[in-house]
Length: 431
Ligand SMILES: *Cc1c(COP(=O)(O)O)cnc(C)c1O
Image: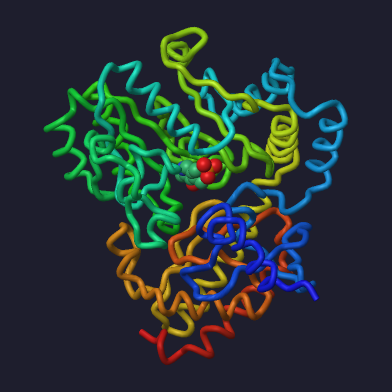
């Protein structure tokens, strides 16, 4: 019989660690990864035929669940006409207009293939447009595996305990300042000292890659004000939060217009697609109009564009975002009720359709708080959930995602499992 364990052993003979992205190897939870055969709606099915309710959702993109009929139909219609042309198609314009209508700060857009490409290109643009070299990022902020941003980064970097990476000369990160999130004083000090040299502040406006950590709205407004005061650009990396924390992104939720926005995940409808954009004047620094070079063989390819268009139509015309947000609220309110009723040391951070459960007695507002949470309990929680048919990201430093297909019955089943976990681990969890 085919099992995940035998497939993983085979995979390790040809793939690095058996995977193509490190978190999938399940190292932080001490078991072998589950190989997936298929997905539909809120569920994935393993190669063993076991069905799981899925809160990973490909780490964010699948706002409408797995294999949504409309997305699949549009990909099918695209694929029979050819997969890539190296020439423009009208779908790129259509998707750009859809995105722009929901994020007006993105007046002019460039599509790329991954979130990493979007942030890499955004900082090149910022440096090219300002003629400055320095960058500022926050501790625990993850912006893809861009050399100059892989400093004190979240996501896989945190999980593996390697906050930066081998293979990055320190000269490459010498211009990258790292300061704590939600710390306006540290931000002010940094800009007072280096402001005239800082090209951009790049940030996840709502952190998702150290688990969900919310900004103080005042802090976000300070980020906007201080960057403007020093002639630096504000880059919102909304690769995760775009169409996940609000229909108009974190920028819509908080009412703050960044200079450059990076998108990915949801806008590709489950296919590789990302984008960066900003004011037309700023974006005209990018080739072919300006001197900032950036290109891509498969960028804006018709499959990703059609999948993205189907997803944006589901959001704009079919209420998929609102449904997913309502279901997230049902789940989060349910978990919070369980925590209070049982007096346990758990925190739920959530916004829109993203949430993280932290095993902490006190609120989690920074990377330090995240690091002080109980990772042994997370491991027990992960294993309990998976053993009870609920798939969550295999790391305490990740966001969980909800789709519009997670109906009331699915949410209530999940709450029953979490109730069981609290009951079984009450001695360790009690406040
Ligand atoms: C996922 C993510 C990225 C990287 O996107 P990839 O498509 O994995 O390269 C960048 N920034 C944020 C905030 C992300 O969540």
